[in-house]
Image (cartoon, rainbow, N blue to C red; front, side, top):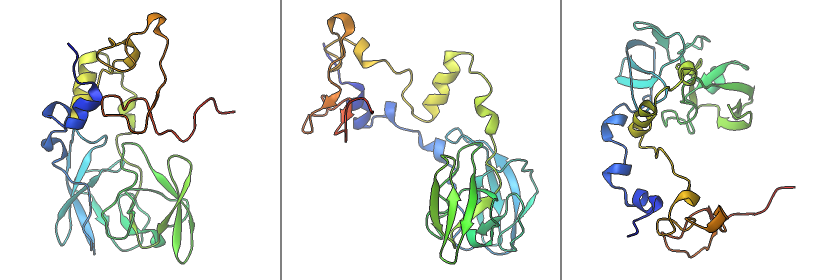
Length: 232
């Protein structure tokens, strides 16, 4: 008897394919208004994130941010004096060129949307009266509002990929925490009843381009590709 293919099961959104709420109990963001300075109360661990989380106490409230490299508990960070020091949260217009930053706001006041993974950082490339040009980890430049805030420094946790995952069980629990599908079985290795690409004598791959009006069980492979064929 056939069964729902994985794409359908994930689309249904059962508890098997849904991230547990407790994984995201720490919301990474800073308040809309920050003045003066804050203090690092605690460094906490979060299974849903690839870096340690820093709990910060400011004059107004307590909030969480991705920890920066070499952070220590009890350290003070500034929000407005313009000093180029790791951990300070400043507007892009107040950050010198060639400074490494992370947790950049997409729009002023949204709490930080870009560069949050462990060990990553962006670099301030150019500044003008209206916009700041940032060199992203992908080596591409992106423009931001000069009033968007960012944290100076590098995200902590850069060595997480260096330690080998010796046992499959450890990888299983890492993926389960983030509700990632693992291990992934290749579609062509399945039976014909379990996947549109399944079976096939000699394992000759079928067309991976799904029709645009294909139903969910058939909507697999390349969905509405812009182009096909080997790029010349």
